[in-house]
Length: 177
Ligand SMILES: [Ca+2]
Ligand SMILES: [Ca+2]
Image (cartoon, rainbow, N blue to C red; front, side, top):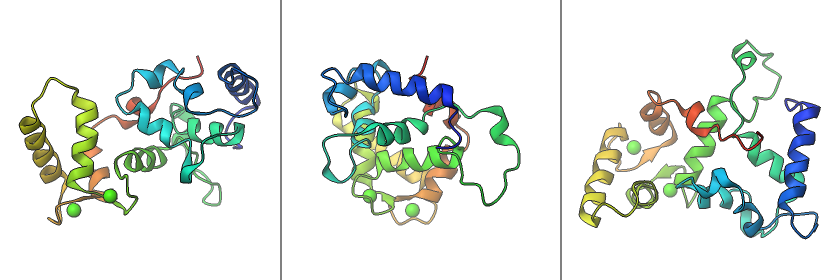
């Protein structure tokens, strides 16, 4: 976490303590559901899931800070050439993309299947489309991204299809105001 300044770490810790209503020393799902930026995000529940890897039900401060690091806006200085030995910051474009990809890839097999795409699109487009419309949106989305024609979207295909979108902006949820 060396890329996080002391000041922002202190603010993050205040945020953690404020969310931790009963001063348990850790957070659970209901605590995280108080984060407004997540409550209004269609993938908020999926993002909350990513705080709890492998069936755990609580997250401590280091785990909380690690997941939130993906959402910090990319600072201008991040575009400078870094020492190759330096680890990539968690909020780099590549890490944001990896994080976004795993929100789609529920079974973690490295590919977004048609069903997985459908589930995400259902969350994103809301209730105003019919199941039939949703399926055709899914068809189109998968087809547009699927370059090798295996019917699923690999990480590379995902990256290419998002290239024109401003992922930094989309993934920069300002939790630390
Ligand atoms: Ca998958
Ligand atoms: Ca493919």
